Image (cartoon, one colour):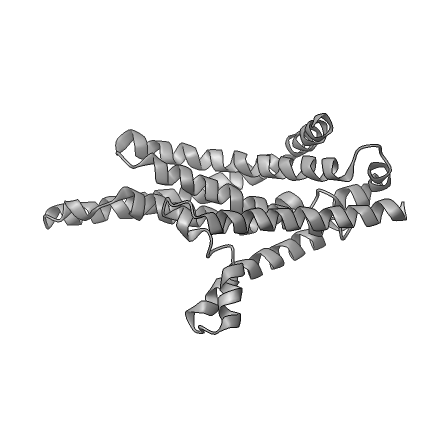
Length: 255
């Protein structure tokens, strides 16, 4: 655990000692803030129209504001996760420090977990900015906090799986741009797999739909924790880190 913490702290320091973390946090906050502003504005206008027609009881801030915003945050992750993971191992290769890392007495799993947890930590910092926006809803309204908490859990699990995939891809190249582009491509494919079920109900379409990260986020977005969805995300995390370990093992042998 001590080695994992040391690597985690080193990675977090490298994020925040460069413009990387600040640029990502600012971009995420601005884009999500724009989504929040538009969603709340539409909700207020719709509420005024409902009030005028005497149908105010049909308004639900959780369903009409929070749930769509969580979905928007999930979409944003597709673009930001590759930028978080692309440097994890690719930069080590480019700087020539991967050999030193591979031949160090620190175990591969400790290196991998430390770097992956740092990536998850940076993503969690991004989600903190969304919490600031949601705080306004709780100050001026009365939404249910439990579905929001479950939605955040789903976002972290989904991001954890995609970050594990990005961590593995980062071990395959020394070029950060290639690592980022490849990670984005894989994450996008895992996203659009769900589209197949919209026009085909055959076995292969059902399997592809099940492999989509979107399919398993729906229940979290509704405030429900389904065991099959949690198991799916944990499996993606395990497989991503497992393949990363195998890639690191090959690097250690070549060193």
